[in-house]
Length: 254
Image (tube, rainbow, N blue to C red; front, top):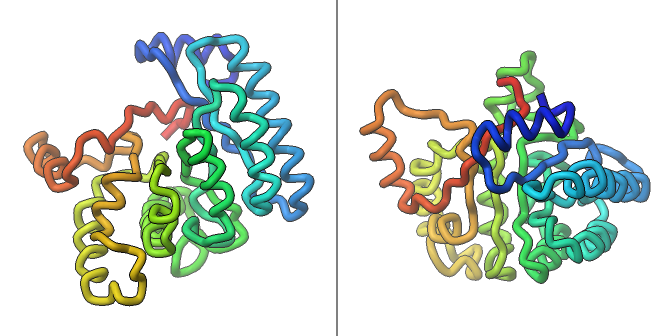
């Protein structure tokens, strides 16, 4: 699956009746220590995506791969690709060397906001640090499920570092993060903010409001409760059904 344009058309476009589909190339650019080499590979990836996929299938849209370890070079690549309207978001990985709210990344967010691009954050890691807070796991299942914790950490970081306050037009899309954990996460984030909000005076409203206004989540994976009624209650607790985006996770086997 996904190994050719013909397979992608049959499986993920015609198979789902999709009018458009966004390609998210998951390539290990962020794991490369040499930031100039990483930026060159990012540019090559975007050129390959354009020539081999976007130019050959009008229903496809692209995510801009960037080397976020050097924000200046990442901004250069965003500026280069943003001239092509088929690129609709900037792609980052969920786990790197710092939480995504860290201000070193803000030039990337400013460029995305300037061009009307969302920031897509896909489950993935540089694997220079353990993927769980307790150390390295032994099995794929542990690694896969633990990514939800990192998405939560990044949400807190983006809000409390002030990324959304600084860039009010910014939208983040959490890709393959799950979303059924949102109600309890937002309740705890709000409760804690009320007690210590003097520490972050730029966070001028509850964290849940920032999440509802600036963050979207893909439907896959849906860690669904056992009944439709429970799912309806969960969506009511999230508070906005337009936070959820259709996704196939194609071609991931799981």
